[in-house]
Amino acid sequence: MNTPDSVPAPAAPADCLFCKIASGAIPSAKVFEDDQCLVFMDIGPLTHGHALVIPKQHVRAITEAPLDLASHLLDIAQRVARAQVAALGAKGVNIVTNDGELAGQTVPHLHFHVIPQYPDDQHVWNWEPHPYADPVHAPVLAAALAGAMP
Ligand code: 5GP
Ligand code: ZN
Image (cartoon, rainbow, N blue to C red; front, side, top):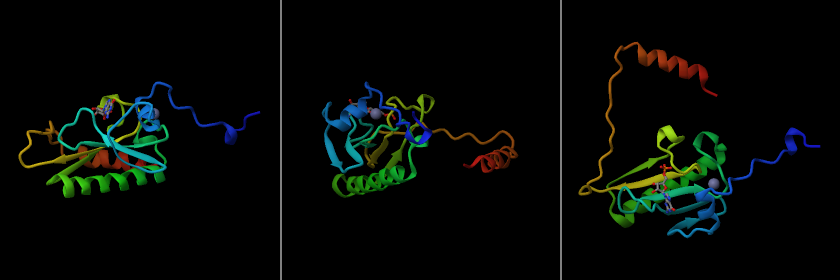
């Protein structure tokens, strides 16, 4: 009989694109790999050198990742960013992860985008800040978040 401790983790979806890339079933332009992660070039880059850092094990998104795995992926993303500066002449780098469809996640397997930025590229972020309508909103939201921190 299964006890909670013996219930296996849910299997990765059989049709997960990034699981197939991690296993080599689908080819990718590989940058780096170790026992936990793979780095490869994004097929639809926002800029030249846009890379993706993924765990080899299936994890849906950052909010579901064990801390040691998330930390390792970020360590690798930092090294990729430094390589983009050193090898490609990037003058800035965005490290981004989207969690959930509403946030723009199209592949439901955790990935960090590492996106180099150059002074002469045409890429712009569609990032339009809007101040809170009432100044009380920020501290009210801060208190709600503070009370919900896991
Ligand atoms: P998301 O929208 O989930 O944050 O990012 C998914 C990323 O995966 C996109 O930037 C997209 O270009 C990339 N991508 C989707 N399919 C493939 C593929 O088959 N190979 C590679 N290398 N990248 C892919
Ligand atoms: Zn997967």
